[in-house]
Length: 410
Image (cartoon, rainbow, N blue to C red; front, side):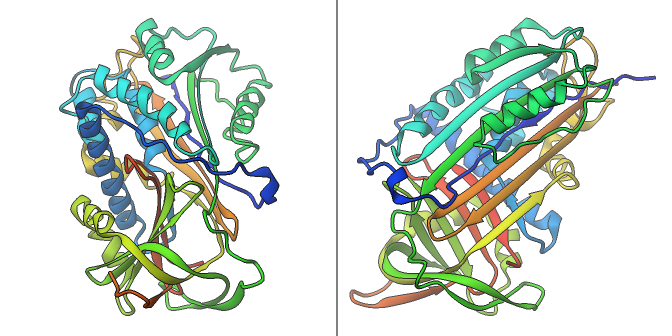
């Protein structure tokens, strides 16, 4: 009987619970991230992957609520790519957008980007942690481990996976690195699991201009299915960056010192959010971002909370995007992890987001398992998200997309 080796990759991003103002730092001027020409090219290709992944996931779900972390997926898959070889390596790099770059370029980019993301806003707490958990009898090649340590700062931990306490050790690490937002990623470790890789990203920020809770009110939200729900709307009139696109309005809501922001894409009345999501391209996204300019908005968005599990969807989506060889036991080549033949048997994200008057709380868990074998001055523009919309969280200076979501029904 074939044994299994599962590499579990967990990437968690989380943001602010409602906290008192005294717990937040006063914003300092943001520090933009400086990239080399090669790093800029890698970043743009990574963001193209982010938009493509979001579009294809939207198609796969067919009108359901969606919330993913493209950054989490890219980080996790890039780390695992260090174990790939041959066509599998090329397919993974091509799907991620890194086919024109060496592994050293790709790894070096993330080694530079991740620490830089932590520094751009002193009011945002961004934690990135990585760990490799190896069954104490399983042989893993040193260069693979060295790459994870050197470029992703992964700690290396050998465990007796048959010890009933082993899952608790890993779950505690996840809880410790996500402010207890993600407390459990595994219930048990099967006898044929041999290696787990965990990546935790924790994000906590606060709106630059918080919403007054006294102004929040109950109103109707028209879901994609046609159902009308009563939701709590947060509202304020303030200057935001805004643009009009083809049949959509786009608003940017900044956090802290404006290094991070949420982009909300609101289709015009009568335009399906699915039509917008499933036709989204990188050029459209760039057009929206480049078109943003200051405008006074009467901003109205719902308070919401959402959990999402992509287990049924990610492998089909990434197969369609070109990574199919990694999931095929007859073609996968992960010889740089171990001499034991492997293929990716499990790939999913578990995500969570909460948006309220203070800010945004969000979490994403990516799991990968390997098996063997504009307006005129003075005009206030209504921006009322009382129907399905798209939303994204991005870093300003680089445009790095941390999260992407489709709200079909609050």
